Length: 152
View 1 (tube, rainbow, N blue to C red):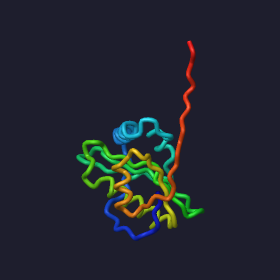
View 2 (cartoon, rainbow, N blue to C red):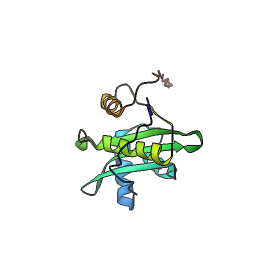
View 3 (tube, rainbow, N blue to C red):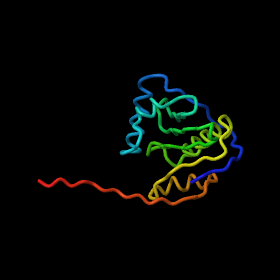
View 4 (cartoon, helix red, strand yellow):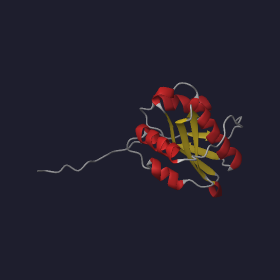
């Protein structure tokens, strides 16, 4: 899916993970949300820099949502790599707020022209969220998996 630039009203703020407890909560949420992801929660924390950012949402001092994005200003491109909200906090607008914050950062601060993301077809809630913000499907990908069977 992709999104062309449209101004977004900034509603949140970039929140740093200040202590080990917050880092552990983020890692746990990421691992629960994306069981076999290409980046682990710890791997995401290692990748953070001026253009790879993590925005988190806290409720009652606990991490309940996040969005991880990567920007490439040299090519004026950005990607939403992961967005996750704890199951108990879904359908409350948290994902939308996080996505808007990511869009504001990418289009506003990094000045990207195009944003892309990949979402699994079975993630109906994610499709609804992205379409409600203005994303459209550009490509449909097919992937295959082959597992080696060990004969005993």
